[in-house]
Each structure stands twice: as structure tokens, then as C-alpha cells.
Length: 219
Image 1: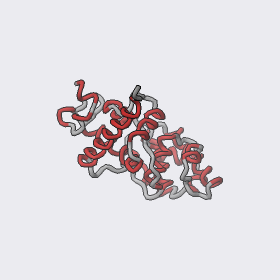
Image 2: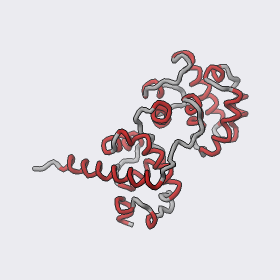
Image 3: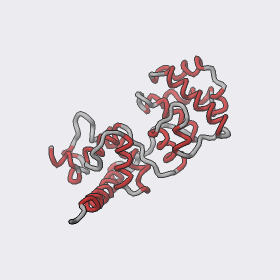
Image 4: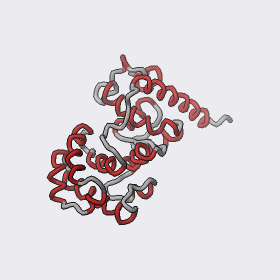
């Protein structure tokens, strides 16, 4: 009896390669939309981005980084001052605590440098797997898949995963996407989710992925 799983996986890999090619053609400008100059700034911006738009974060961070330019400065920060600077991004008290605590960990245990392993990153306060993968990919060039709401939703619509749990989605995508595509895939998902595959009204009629998408085929 023929094992169908390898055949299915091969088909998904071919589909994934086509999806990447079409998305790159459609969104050649797709990059991380959080402004940053180095890994610690990206870490802080990513913590701030929880339940907040990247555009709002980018408005907040210049003043924040002017007052606290690195992990060493943030490790000594007064929480009330940090809260004042980030208040408009929401959840500001929790985020201020996480930013200060993670900066202290970086100074105390990583010589002031943001670590470059998943295990070390996810041990930092306020840093989960999504933020850790963002740092690995965009700060250090380590292949990693950022599974945010856009990525999880669109990947399921396309048919590259049948799961909703981010860790399971990441595992499924890692099995069918070329590692060289992992970093770009997350950014492309964000662009596609904001532009055409909008959550409440996917524009399948104008979507370049429609011929290769499970949802479009059934709509």
C-alpha cells in the first residue's frame, strides 16, 4: 500500500514554492515594518507591538530610544518614565515591566547583547516564540517563521496547515517551506493580509494565489 503522506507533503512543498514566488512578485517591498537599528531596538518594538499597530509603535519608539538608547540604560530605567513614553500603545504597564526586566536579563546574563538562540530569547520576560523568531530572522538572519494572526489565518486558507495553534502552524510550515524562505514568508503574510486577504473580506477575485488556494477554490 502506498503511503500517502510523503506524496501529500511533496505536493504542499510545490504549492509553498509557488506561493512564495507569487507573493514575492506581488510584494517585492515586504520587510519587517517595525523601525529598528539593532537587535535590542527590535526586541523592544516587538514587545510594544502586542495588540498595537506597528505604525503606532514606530511613532512611540524614537522618543523611547532617545531616553533609553540601549539595554544598559533601560535596565536602570524608572518604570513610571517608561510607562509615560509608551502609554499610547496600550497595555503600557505590562509592556514597561517586560521591557525593563528583559533589558536587565540581557545585561546580567548576556553581556548587554540580545541573545541569538530560541531558548535564550524565550527565557526573557515578555518574549514568546513569535518575538523570538522575529529577532532570530530579522536581527540575526537565522531561518525562522513568525506565526502571527495573518500568517496563521492565511496559511490555513491556502491549505499549508490545518491547525490554528501557532506552534503547530510553525511546524507545518517548516515542513513544506524552504528554510531560505522562512524569514520572508512572515513578512509576505502580513502584506497579503493587509492588502488582499483581509480577514473579513478576502479579495479572491484579485488575488494572485487564488489558483493555488484551498479557500479560493471553494468560494
